[in-house]
Length: 130
Image 1 (cartoon, rainbow, N blue to C red):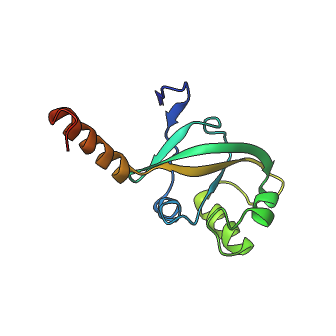
Image 2 (cartoon, helix red, strand yellow):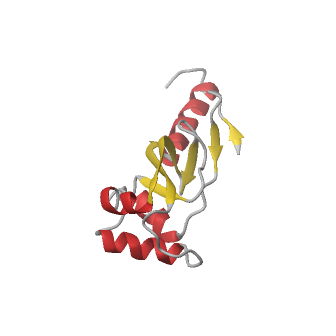
Image 3 (cartoon, helix red, strand yellow):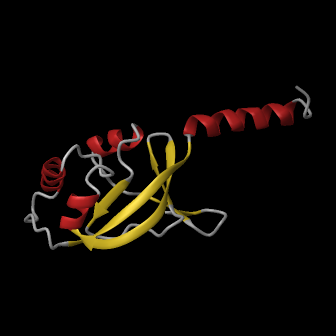
């Protein structure tokens, strides 16, 4: 965990390859977890892109399945249940289980940041001339 200039943190959220792919494809904008990861404003990296946590809500797993299955990257409520039970093999499926729903947005592309760094270095080396 590293601190950003604004006092927020860069955090690590472990996830499987399927969730990483869904996030990078823009099909997953929430992550339900048994524990809270960070706070609104904190960021995490997936691939070369940065994502910022916008909101964290405590709710039942059943509510996540019913109302947020699409933002979890699932195509149906049953698909969400299958994803969840596959990722939490030791836990019994219980719709009353309380989880933390992390809502996030992509904030910075690694490619864009790389281009900006190269442009900045070019300006420094060329004395600001193009």
